[in-house]
Length: 129
Image (tube, rainbow, N blue to C red; front, side, top):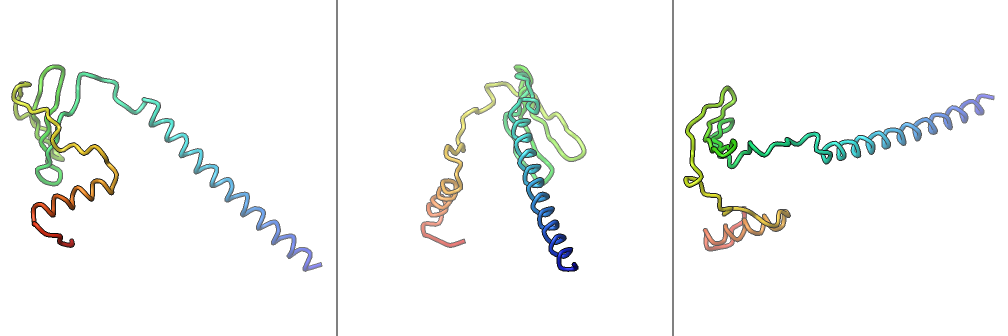
């Protein structure tokens, strides 16, 4: 009698564990699908063509200088954790819109190999990090 109850309880416990694992995987999958759908739906993206960040430059951790396009005007601002300060207005002629440092292939292998080539050019020999 005791062995029958023990076998039944073990089977029930294993069955409950398998069902819980299936439910957990299903919840993870559904949350992944909903997150991807929400990100691609356009609800998150700003739908404005009047304001855009042209360029950022980090001076130190938490302090940056940004060039922002607002309509037809360009404004340089300094940003810190506490405040944002307008530095000056810029004209389109004062800005350089050439993409000099743009990397076309963003795979890790391509980025790493370009860094290694630059390092070889600057040192003249193959050094290890």
